[in-house]
Amino acid sequence: MNSDRPSYNRAEIGEVSIFYREAGPKNAPTILLLHGFPSSSHMFRDLIPKLAQEYHVVAPDYPGFGQSSAPDAEGYDYDFATLAETIDAFTQGLGIESYTLYMQDFGGPVGLRLAQKHPERVEGLIIQNATFHAEGWNPDIVAQFAPFWAERTAETEQPLRAFFKPETTQWQYTHGSGRSDQVSPDAWVSDQAGLNRPGNSEIQLEYLWNYQDNIARYPSWHEYLKQAQPDTLVVWGRNDPFFTQAGVTALQGILPEAQVNLYDAGHFALETHVSEISDEILRFMAR
Image 1 (cartoon, rainbow, N blue to C red):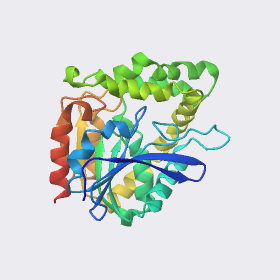
Image 2 (image 1 turned 90 degrees about the horizontal axis):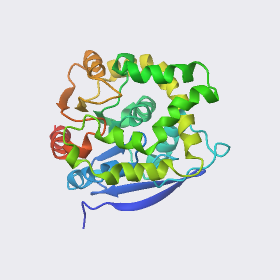
Image 3 (image 1 turned 60 degrees about the horizontal axis):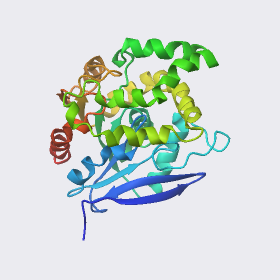
Image 4 (image 1 turned 45 degrees about the vertical axis):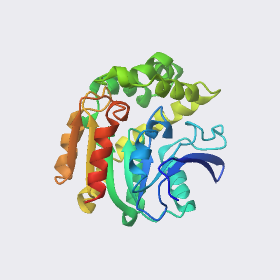
């Protein structure tokens, strides 16, 4: 009997152990849920049951996040190319031949790498507060990253380490949420537990350092999107302190048929608007 309750599993992919949540009938179309920073598959805990009655839903934790293993940097390259390769191998190990990609934050560059590599596998894109345009970045955030990306030193790393502090993790969830009384503290407490693991700050700094490679790939991703014109649903928290609506507008210039839904929500819009977003996803999947 199929169940909308997830199972909690592990897959051994090379040198890493990937934790993942899986629910729904395995013979149904797959929705691959790709989380952001500093989260994990935990961010999809309320979404999965709403989708799994009709769809096969899979949500992995990235290496260094959530319940997945976090080998030291000598045992794993913490960059987005390697991360995408790991998730690609993970999907192939599960026998997933096609998927709709749900991409939030870090999930954007991971998902578009998968889409470029395997365009034939992509049945659609669901974009939630992930940008592929320079104009989609909040200038204040760019100002924090620019010195670090220009020259990596202990001094330029220091402002980025603020992203690993408990008060910043909580702020990412509550800022602009629109319904702050509905944002569960479990979300940021869970994320902070991951960030507090010994050595995890250095892992996250590697990912943040490599994020500039994603920005360099924006033109290539634009070309992919222009040529492929994948069916696309945008579900976006308009009060995101990192990624602005200008990125949505730019995306519409490339994907004019994209369905766009804006919510009075922040970066983690599922915390407050999971019912509205799940309804839109179900309509999109039934197209």
